[in-house]
Image (cartoon, rainbow, N blue to C red; front, top):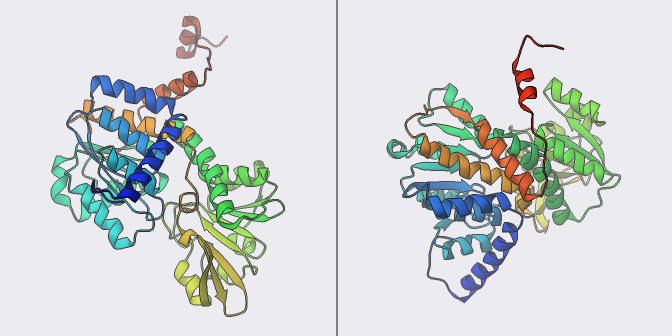
Amino acid sequence: MTSTKNYDIKDLALAEAGKQRIEWAAREMPVVKLIRERFSREKPLKGVRISACLHITTETANLALALKEGGADVILCASNPLSTQDEAAAALVDYGIPTNAIKGEDEATYYRHINTALDNKPQLTVDDGADLVTTLHTKRRDLIKDVIGGTEETTTGVIRLRSQQKAGELKYPIIAVNDAQTKYLFDNRYGTGQSTIDGITRATNILWAGKKVIVSGYGWCGHGIALRAKGLGAQVIITEVEPVRALEAIMDGFQVMPLIEAAKVGAIFITVTGDKNVIDKAHLQVMKDGAILANSGHFNVEINIPALASLARSKRTIRPFVDEYALGDGRHLYLLGEGRLINLAAAEGHPASVMDMSFANQALCLEYIVKNRGKLTPRVYPVPEEIDKQVARLKLNSMGIEIDSLTLKQKQYLASWQEGT
């Protein structure tokens, strides 16, 4: 759905459906609602141009509306070709927010939409995966002079940006929203866990109980997926390259083994590492007939799809988001969602309740950057602790939960190095 207001009847119906779904998501996003109400009064982003490259979902729509209420000139594009909810895109356009995204768009269209978002000459960037920032730094460098700062939503993007910083190529400050406790402990763990299982289930209608599920990567996303699969009765095996995470997986009650061994026994494979060719040709060659391959990492590089294609004598789409690869030796392997984020390709992404905290961090960090304009150097910053804690407090308040506070004497005790008894 591109940013046009020349709707036909179908577009109007789509936009109306999107508005209803955006309202439904808003019910689970009380923190963003509070921020939106304050932004509406104070206009902290008045006149600021924001280009945002995010998954175009109903939750993202609520963030965009909050930024607009804060006075910002917002334009959106998709951060993944298969993650767009077309009804949400249509509704955003109807709300007056240019949105350049179509579910299933090809690579050329995807990057054309990113460049359209950059044509707005952003002063703030909001990214999910760093494709917008990378395009800005490589092909649209003339626009960097106008940029105050930006934010990054996901692990993959933060990794790319830190690499860019290390190489001395990052030209403006960016806050790593992904690294806020109120983001990764909830969005990455509970959001990815639930939505990944949801996406695979919708695509395949499999029974999880009794299946051997291989989860590659035991970061916070891997934690969540393993926990949810185990809860459905699956036998979960973790593959890792980091010894501490592997040890943690063992202590959490999961099997841990090299992927080449897990490949021989697994029924469902889920990658969530952020790296390339995690499932490679050698693994594909030993998998059992009927194995299902899914990815919840940001880019479709974790499963070596060219290698899979090279082993296949034919390919067909057997269900929506399920491609069957018939191999030369008679085995069949099933790739879900073209190897893209299965939780957004075949389902609706993270529940609104966890995105409430992630997008609250986004909004407050953008406000922070504007308030500190000229004071931040070009590097990747953590979310300020006061913002992280503010989001947690607001979320607890919205749930009707109260917590204790330290007395003055307790604070003094914790601050003293002399008093031990």
